Amino acid sequence: MTNPSRKTYCTDSKWIGRAQCNNCHIRHIMLFSELPETAFSTLLNPINNFTHPSSSVLYEAGTNKKFIYSIRSGVVKLLHVAQNGKTRIVRLLGKGTSIGLELLEGANSYHHTAVTIGEVDLCKIPVPTMRLLEEKYPVLCQQIRQQLQKQLDLADQWAFSLGTGSVKQRVAQLILILEEFFADESGAFTLLQREDMSAMIAISDQTISREVAELKRLNLLIKRKTRDNLYTCNTAELQKRAQLTK
Amino acid sequence: MTNPSRKTYCTDSKWIGRAQCNNCHIRHIMLFSELPETAFSTLLNPINNFTHPSSSVLYEAGTNKKFIYSIRSGVVKLLHVAQNGKTRIVRLLGKGTSIGLELLEGANSYHHTAVTIGEVDLCKIPVPTMRLLEEKYPVLCQQIRQQLQKQLDLADQWAFSLGTGSVKQRVAQLILILEEFFADESGAFTLLQREDMSAMIAISDQTISREVAELKRLNLLIKRKTRDNLYTCNTAELQKRAQLTK
DNA sequence: CGAGGGGTTGACGCCGATCAAAGCTGGTGG
DNA sequence: CCACCAGCTTTGATCGGCGTCAACCCCTCG
View 1 (cartoon, rainbow over the protein chains, first blue to last red):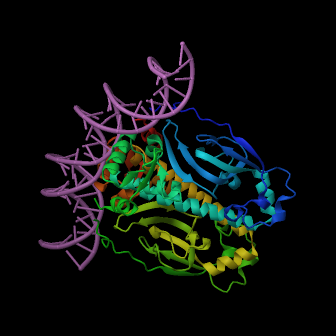
View 2 (spheres, chains in turn purple, green, brown, orange):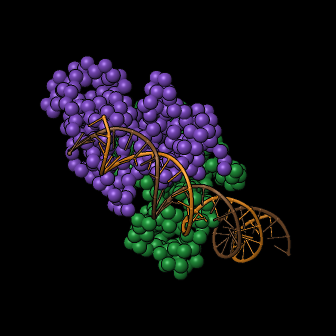
View 3 (cartoon, each protein chain N blue to C red):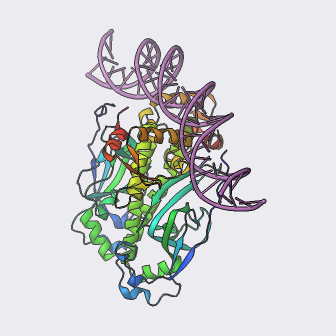
């Protein structure tokens, strides 16, 4: 039985302001990319823009708030929480993805718990606003569809790559995924907490620790000279390691 | 290395006829449920209706056919096939679900391999036809969205319930899922081949065999008197078994 | 009757979970 | 400025679950 209240989640978000969707400089990758600039002038319910510090809970599974979130920067983890307290990270989502979309499909509560990893900048869109926009601009439906298709693809990929094979293979896959999500321009990224990593591939955190140590020893994970916890990895070798038959 | 050509898939489908969507007696649960009856009178590319025997390959991952399929009855398994030949069953899909939707989202090939389990009755819809209908009837987009959301929910549920915990738990979950998908009016269903079951939860087929034997011994899986391979299960007890902390 | 494919069962060995203890780091208060 | 503490990480030792190999059974089909 894992202790459910081990972490204290910090939830104080900072209000940046009312979102200016028509001037949003990253709109081309966002949910509203196909909407005309005039679409946002007459909204009754405002779309607001927030930054959240690390480990903020955006929403919890089963609760009944009425907001969709669109991620402008940072990474959010989606958690499945079972009755017995065990939790698993279902997927990671980054810039340009929308979460909470299940509310649009008749679900009356969120399907997962969403928690930030690192600072996250996002827009909070009331469901009624979505419905209004949808009605006026049918093209929005296509955007939502794309979001869902992408998440479905991601879910399938994870289920396979993190759910199959030995610990060696799965941890290799995990590192590759982290690189993809978190690498900066120079290709460096920080590892997640062991607990988060083990929640992604369903193995114990001690085993993760051992395997990560092994990867360092093999020089497949290389610590940066500078003292922050930045790593680079040998992508090609990790891919091989992830796909050994044995 | 599993032998890739161990099974000979039978692919001879039987053409039932040109689909009569406006008269389809199960249209209310199908992709086209919200379209007017007149929608289908002017289609250039026909929608055809087929039945496929068990183990027919509808399409293979990476190939480039241009059809969406809508399942009228029966069950289809979606396979992920890795480079090293290992395959896993990503999900099962039944009556009323549409597959191959990724083609609508700019994908130029299927993401999975689709194979029938038992006889399957389905409609084969050309992608251009979908595009035409979509253009005329924006409500169709909502239907597609619902399909995707449902499949996403399913994917998440499977990833969790079949990817977490001991063999005891996972096999229990598996049986519950099989019951859900295959049970007839009386609640009886046939087990899949051991190989398919192991492809769903990534354990060896011998272990599956042992665990199934154990469940029979415990009377959680009960063989029907009649000689076909029909089983019923003790749903409540299986659910308990699936969620033990240990 | 023999061959072949699936299913079952047994024996064995290793991988990874678990328990336990000790190192590390950052934050807090004296 | 240092002592202390809490949470995270690492590492060791042990044990059991599950993969693997192998033999055998059963059923179907030629």
